[in-house]
Image: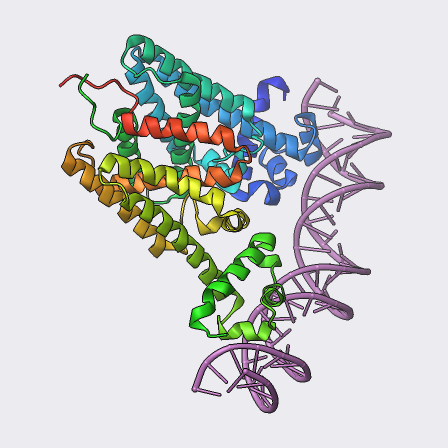
Length: 196
Length: 196
DNA sequence: TTAATGAACAAATTATCTTTTTGTTCATTA
DNA sequence: TAATGAACAAAAAGATAATTTGTTCATTAA
């Protein structure tokens, strides 16, 4: 097996094992046997169990981010981009069951209140994507002239709140409603617009 | 010491001990000695350590809720009530350091995503207060005609998000800014108002 | 009659040690 | 270069004893 070419296969196997047992209970034996190799051979692909975990999670996070980005880039207007981003990000997790389980086992991966975010670099890119959509919307005059940096942070926080609720709550339906309602509140605001 | 009259003194002492050590490390001995009594005498006031904890926390939660309610009732307009509610609730915790520490030790008291909320009854009243303000605002036509029940839940969730951030984040200043910005976003929305 | 105490007991926590499992290294092989 | 199995170190799980702490209760003080 060529190393670089087949990292995907390794990550896929690792992800399902970590999904099933969580980091602590998952063993290198579990992962190796699923790949029909010995655990010592896993050290060709990662220097330690912890690193294998970190790399696997980073790989899954990036895949998620990519899917959202692809969906956003198919839209042209800022309003549409913002809407697609919000709904696609949430909808994706319903399709990636293994990753959802991993997030459930380890809430520190995508923390509501990051003290030290282990995937800071990846999440920073998500904030940047939001910021760019805000900038476009402000330029288009379809968004109010908010502070793009600050508001990107705040929106990312609210967005995370819903993501986390998605995979903690079991009742999907009730959540879907709440999400649509919150989206509506966020874009239209609570107060009636003062006629200018 | 008369029982009913002096529950406050018991709760105050219990709160500071639980604040210092958390439920697990706090002992009845710690609490009793602070009150200059023996631990066995604490059983006059509460049937178990767990119950004493529960009652103490409920007492502190209600005190917090009361302060916010009092501040809100001094306003007459829905906009003002909503604003005061949001800022008072957050500002209060800066004054109740002991309770803040207890919340820090035990995030389940005021959970971001309650599976089974141990203080459901108390929190339901907070949601009701928000709902009533929404109803008033909609009637006054200063708020858009949102669904009061659903939106009260959503706003309570966002509000909790900030409360939790208040006592987890150490940097107060950075938080204050984010809170004001989020409040602004929430009431005015992201999108420009379509001229009707 | 209510609040408080200290002694006695039960339950939970901590500490210590042993056993087992699992992560990591390395010399060797395909 | 990728893979293996044997060897070793580190961590986890189990078992047991020692200690602390929660709870009960008969008795005393206000």
